[in-house]
Each structure stands twice: as structure tokens, then as C-alpha cells.
Image (cartoon, rainbow, N blue to C red):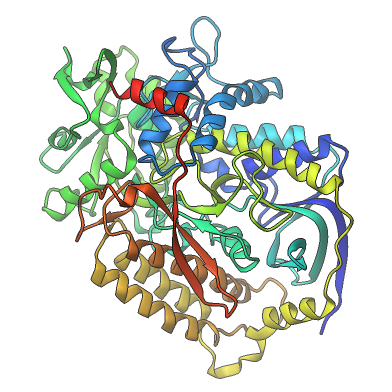
Length: 605
């Protein structure tokens, strides 16, 4: 067995995206010692791919907006499976977090009178997304990184955490390795914050970067945390579909927020064919400006392309399956039509959507100021995650906190666009604050050396498999294909049962995954270790989806295409049993506070 280096911190943050950086900043501000682990280089977190904006009811572009409307929109988008207290905190605190970023140096787009500009986005009643062109996530990371590096926390770049450690019931530390040379490190900590992002690499077509292998979800699950709502995956309606090398790369909802329209191969705006009953609609003076969506006496002009993401994604799938798709299996997203409405239309598009212009020009040879983009659904976001306390973000494992995409609760059955970025900073701050408070009350935990050796042996097992072992890349490829086909946008009981059986076989193959040569710069070894997390998360998704016999939010079950009123009263919960197997159960949603229920009812009129 090799030796390992030991580090001690009061608070350890795993993940350096928006949530992890904000948590590290907050914990450091209390005087606690903080370590920050990132799987990639600092500044390259997947948060940089969030383009459209961050949702906050600031009322700069529409003074009718306030936190209560944002709360109601979030609950409606989540089909009322949300943790309502998290939704309340998020709506109330998001504006302050936007202004905080501005004070730290974020350069937001401005209105003519100098306020932070806000744009339309799917599912939001009013113009609510504070943005920086279509590079909002990049600006968030730049700002948090530039501010954070002066706060005194220590950063460990290109490290991967293999397993969490416990001292009795409480969290005690993490065992990790350097990705470049494979050296092991033991991190002791009084509190740990997981901010590891999503699970998109369980699927073949995804907007997620290579880091999105569900590490935080799986680490917390194996440490004894409860996982909630894992059946709810968001398939973003618009990812690139051509060329194949870039299939799945995100095309921001900001394109539709700035006026982009979806058309099928016949040139028809097919989204008008399927508008939910909750909306009434009338033709606007200029159809391209959209419909007027009227709910009671409240009106907001919004095109049908900005209905919730799950709905738009299924409409695109319908067009493709019925033979009205684009040449490469998607549909067309047209922003160039606005050139005819504006004097400097091409420059307007380039100014509003600079990243999209360069992305399509460089990767696909498409000039979006002249041609339509080919787009289709891509696995984008998991609404489910680690169940945490609404106020503190601590899981049921004492000392283990979570924030951002790896934490569940805020988004319910479906996340509204833009809520993810404000989620990161609202609950990243809270996780850092309460983790620091927890750490201040604890002594440094004791680490079981025998358990560390056991984890190390498991991590090195792929080197001992030999010539009879399996190629880890092939196992991952087969897993992604299977999940895409059997547990993707449209699910059936037959496909989900097939997926559950297939996962058993894939686990057996993963146990035989091999790695050649040594630990230096060895992507095969990294992939073999990622398989444990990918398989755990995939099983959570499939087991949760099998028992939700209805269609709701990001879970569409073709055998049960309608909502079930009874199913809308509980969340799915997954835990690891003492024998290591996975147990799924149902958790009743607590009664919502009366004043919040009144807000929801008022916004439904």
C-alpha cells in the first residue's frame, strides 16, 4: 500500500463551481480553516456553461415582479413537489445575492437607466433573469474566484474524492487522489460541504462536462444520506445536434428569451400546437412577438417557446418522431428572423448572444445571424439530490452539507431556467455559514485507518484486474447508451425494468474494469473509478422512476401520461440499507404554511 498525505480543515468544500466557491467564501469569513477541492482546474467548473442568467425578483425590467411571484412560479414549475421553505428562502434572498456579486465586481448588462437588466425565461411570469450577455455563469465564476482567492482558503486542483469517512455517525473526512500523478490524500474535517454538480454523464447526450459523474450524490448516498426526487431529470430542449462531435452542447434558453423561435422541417412554429390548459392565449399584433399569456387579471407577453423546459423538450421529440424534424434529428431554432425587425439586426444578435454566435460558427460552421440552428433535447440537470435541511443545508449525516445541483428540494419535479444560478449563491452561502457554525462546535474527528486502507485497496483494484478485465470506457459507453434509451425523456415500465436488470450486469462488468500502466495521467483508471458513482446514481434514477406511475415535470411515463393526484403528495426517497442494497420509499410532503399557500392561490387566479 502507498503512503498518503494528511490535511486538516475545519470545513472541507468538495466542488468549486458557484455553490462551492460561495460556500468557501462564507465559511472562511467566520475565521474557520477551509479547504476547497476541485476535480478540474479552478475557474473551469461546469457553472461557466450556464449562459442565460440568474433568476431574482429585482423588478428592474418589470416592476410588477416580487419575491412572492417568483416563489409561486418556482412552486408551479416544480409541480408542488418542492421543499416550499427552500423555495421561499431562494425567492427572498436571490436579489441580495445578485447585488452582492455586483459589489464584488460582476459586470451585468444594464437597462437604459443603469439598472441590472433582466430578460424573459421559460416558466417565469416576468422578465427576471439578471444576465451578462449569454455568459452569465462565466461571469459568476470569474467574480467568485477573484473575490474568493483573497479569503484565505486553500485550493486543491485536479483532485477526485473517492469516498467519505465517518467517525461513528458524524462526518470525519474524505479520501482523494491527484488526477495527474495518482497520489492519495486524506482530508480530515469537522464539516464537509458537497457542491459537486450534476449527473449528466450517466447519459449519452448531455450538456454536462466530463466532471458530471454524480460524485456528490453517490458519496453522500454511501455515507448514509437520504436522496430525494431522483426520477426527475431535466432534458434541456435545445442542445446542438450537429456535428456529432458536439452533440448535446447547450444552446442557451437566452436565444429563445431574445426572440428565437422553434420551427419544424415545414417551417411551422409547432409550439403553438400544444399550449397547456393553464394558459389562455390571444394572437399578438405581431405573431413573432409571441402570445399574450393571461392568468386571471395578470398578463405577460411570452412566446410558447418559453414554456417550461420539460414541455418544450417533449414537443420537440414529438416533431422528430412524427417525421417533421431537421436533417440531423432535431428541429430548427431561428433567431435570424429578427434582422428584418431591427435596423442593425446582425449586430444586435452578436451583442446579445456572443457565445452562441461563436459556438455555432466555430463548431458547426453556422452563422446564426443568417441561418437557423439545429437543436434537440440534451440531458441537462437533475432536480433530485441529497436531502438537506431547508435552513442549514445539512443532510441527516451530522456535519455533511450540500448545495447547488447535488442538493435536492428547491426545484421539485422541474427546475425553471435561471433558478440554478441563484440557487448556487443563495444556498452556497447558507451551506458555508451553517457548516462553519457546526465546525466551531466540534472537535476534530478520529479517522479509522483500517477503513482508509480498505478504500485505497478498492481504488487500486483496476490495476490488479489484469488481461481478463474489461475496458472501462466500453462499460461507461454501454451504460450511457442504455440510460439514454431506457430511462430518458420518455419512459415506459418495460424500459425501466430492462434498465434495472441491465444495471446488475453493468455492475458485474465494472468490478472487472481494468487499468494499464501506472497511476500517472491515466484516464482509464479515472473512468474505472467514476463507474461506481455513475452506477449508483443510475440505479437511484431508475428505481425512483419505476414507482412513480404518472407523468409530472421532468418524469414523463408513456404508460401513465397523466398526473396522479395521490402521487403529487409525496417525494421519492432513496437510502442505502445495511447490507449495501438500495432502498426506495415515499416521504409525505409536509403541509405548506398558510401564508405561502395563499400566495400560490393568488397567483393561480
